[in-house]
Image (cartoon, rainbow, N blue to C red; front, side, top):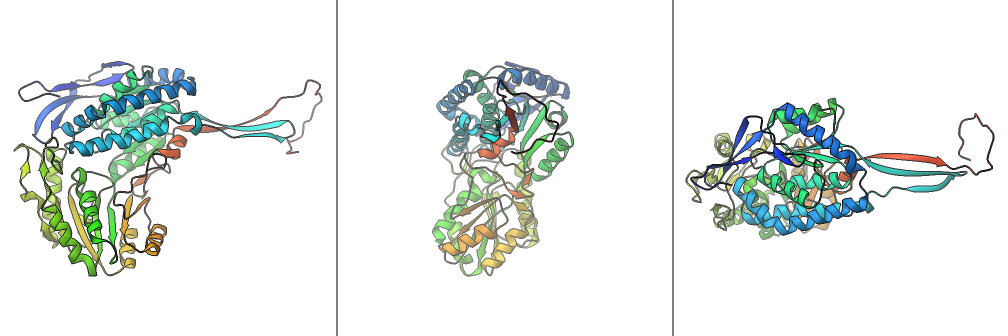
Length: 502
């Protein structure tokens, strides 16, 4: 990345082992803490996407025939390289996304867990075998790679989200075309270099930067067999509808409005800490962020007081300076989030803490907005209805567990939720009744570990397959069942009847 007074770095595509392929269009990459342009990323044309896919298709033929032993060696080597370079990748994330270094390092570490899971691919791809299912007939199952798969990843987790998909796709024998966010592409570029260093053949892992033109080219290209996407719900729906219309397998993870229900018997100090961590970590730019805190009336005032006290101690600023929260990713996004704060005030919500008035430890041109807290929010308000994707926490008061549960279940999103209680019966009832894909019990951000799968319900997921875990292995492979009979040398004769299970 560039420093003040230097030319912004050029960030380009990885096509079959070479860094090249500019289309003449570029997009600016910023340091959100300073507002400085630090890079210019090449934006691919549809023709260039076609070149990348063709390169991946050729490379896939050899990689699909590569032994599991060799694939595993590459996976282990990538894991070791990623672990050794995770500090460097975290620094790239902070420089382009803005999240604080500890948060960026945590992102890489969680992605690393999926790479570790993929190292077990020989076991994960084992099929079944039934000997003598019928007389002298054996039946067995196989899982085989799809071909070229596309991964379209968002700006908020430029390392972790690609790592949800790519290690498993590659381990299963596919070739990958990654289109990272043009807002913060350098972490993806750095990881692509690690795949090459780990011994992955050229063309199996490719990176193409771009905007809607590149996305549409991937969604419609006949040689792209599957698409993995994470982003907002409107775009996830578009990706799903467009790609499936062109015959592709799709997992499109959309937006969220995650609720945290706090019951009267909860440990309110634990709940207040959790609300701060889940509401304002990564400046609220998480699909698993808690943005709606549902508090039973009897404890709402005390809980809000505890949250407010903790908010006063938060320091917002440059992610490299030991701050608690960094800037938002772009000035446009900062302005959009700030407009929701104004909309909440206009709608009659009580603005308890106004993050627009914070002092910030960073550049005057940084994309700043401090942690913001609303009380007396109602479901009709835009700050409740919409996914704000910023450091805005809305408190909705309810009279009971039942009212809180009904509020959550009525929401069109179903990504993540949490309940805070010391009542095991209430917690068990909640996990069974709530219509959400990922549930936390006294855990505010219930992101599953890598050997389980990540994904929501309702408008938070388009497709029926979640990310990583065994869902990921199944998504990136096709099942095949073989029925075989090897005849004894002395066998003879004809039988024109329908095969029977004798």
